[in-house]
Image 1 (cartoon, rainbow, N blue to C red):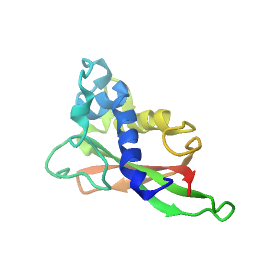
Image 2: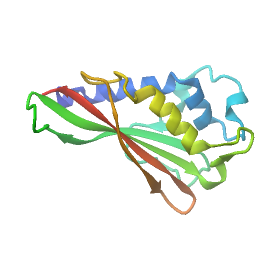
Image 3: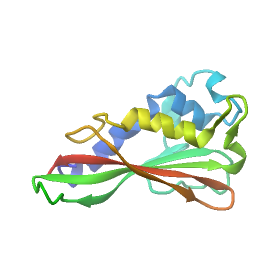
Image 4: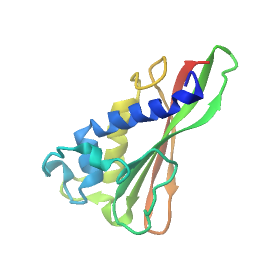
Length: 160
């Protein structure tokens, strides 16, 4: 995040990386027990602002049983050891309706599968910034009575 004006470009780059992952898109798009066996999504951009959001919230999540992913930047700071760089957290919220957590057709849990795909895209990859993006931390989040999931963060470094 060399300049705050680049945040829009950087989050767009993150979103493009997310929709480029067909497995992640299927996990979010298809509520079926085995989304991996569903047909390919030809235009994954339909997930933007429907299943994937560049906000720290998901509009209308209380109204629709589904799976959602939000990506945003948070915790901007100057590291104490190098004032020539900025650090920021790239945050992902994985939010899944309680009826969609289990995927009996796969033997897996949907939130963990979504986390795996996000981690494949981000962890130790050069997705944005000047360095590879390491995993920082994660935690359980309760969105409301029907939705829960996880928040994970990756550390991004850029020129100050």
